[in-house]
Length: 318
Length: 179
Image (cartoon, each protein chain N blue to C red):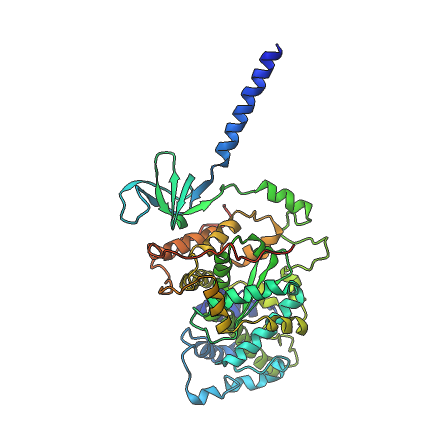
């Protein structure tokens, strides 16, 4: 079962989405009445936008978010044990590693150590300007001619070789890595996973209570690297664009590197298969440029001497 | 007769050359309604305006500004107000290339090369690869290595606050596919 993440982002619609699914008889067992209240409360508690604030000591050791959820434990055995209510940094990293490992199963790293080290140097420096400089950031170029980039919780950032090929200088690479770093900093993917997990817990609770049909026991991260193919809310993409520009600017780069890449992407025909997934999961580059322009206004007018560093930009061997 | 022919050829050649040159000047289009200014500064005199979707000629870039020519005026505008390249829906060259590489039409990668793709289905089917994760981790830079790398490139940190969402949310394109 897949419920569109756009819907999930709208808390008010969450319950109605669920109910709609139930009515449609997609795959949820039919006992909405039972869990509606519990789930609603749990949703409120767990995916509060302010959930980043430190929790009380009691709640930190709670591994199951609600009494109801104990019944769902059997459905989540296969994944790393994670406190979904308030994942620790370590749990977040473990989750990101799992997702990245799956993504690398779809497209392995480009076998070019110098390239990988170069991208890690640039990425690490940009990430050091972010609000989560303490994460052990990992960057990789994966062997795919698609144009795309991926972030996973805990500081994992992958970009495709096809996208790297479009860059002409280091500032552009820094801007794109900055966008992905922005997703990690704001825990955009993690929040989607938390919501998904919550749904699984709710569904698992019902299943166990009602009968054997436990097919909803999807891992929160879905199968394989499915999470990497999911869309985030549009506003999350715009936020990541703003942060990408901010981090790259603070790092001393020419601030418009990301915008230049968006310009290039905007000129790619949407019929070109290499951008199919990117265009499906992101607002059109033109919209992103316009949104970025609205946010930037005159704020970059006084940023001079930003570097592009095309001279040391690492060129792909093939 | 031969002379006339020669002249004709020369004439058409020079026409072709001129056409080529004017095409080479970069075209663009307005991403939003904005003002044109006399100089590349926020407080420079407004010399005109343009509306979203209008085509422009890009003459020059200077910092965060582009000098552009509209049908009526010439002036400076912030570069994030302008989309570079043409607005046409289909990039024919890209289409041809896509067809040639088996990526035509459907938006699905029809891979004929044996390279694994990153379509939704392929991502779903992916299996965890521990060896690759270990390799990834082996390339990790420390904070200090990152700093040294920055210094080597002459990068200096700049004080700059995270950009906030503008008060007015960006307009959504109805349909979104009209580009």
